[in-house]
Image (cartoon, rainbow, N blue to C red; front, side, top):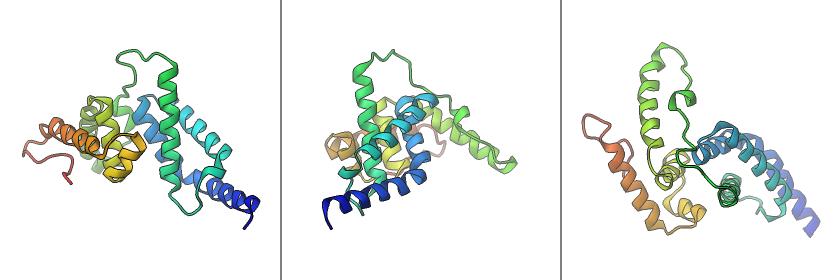
Length: 178
């Protein structure tokens, strides 16, 4: 396979895989920015960059991990290029939830409480919780994506579990220890 064929395979895999990742990318953008519109812009910029740099994607590897890394990089660059005001970046938990009927109301109430508590975590903990518990990344994958040691991810998650542990009346943690 020559260079041109290789790039064509990469581009095809990226083009075909992006639509299925849009919701997950948007959720990650929302976790990072706390703003629905910013999340949309991050997803658009991520898709554009993924298509522009598709030759850098290794066909057959995880497209989701690659695009999450791109989104994270775009967000970090955005933070560097503008001043972030204190208190900016928090989304109301009730806006992020949709009720599917009466049987879901109780679950949505609890989920809203959990999301509100997670929103109150420091950004580093909030992002770590999302990547590991929300997206199912391993500690190693999250550490690589965030460019921190694996122990830092473990520490952030432990601190988040302690902070969120007070929510359940039976003392069981909301987040599983691994």
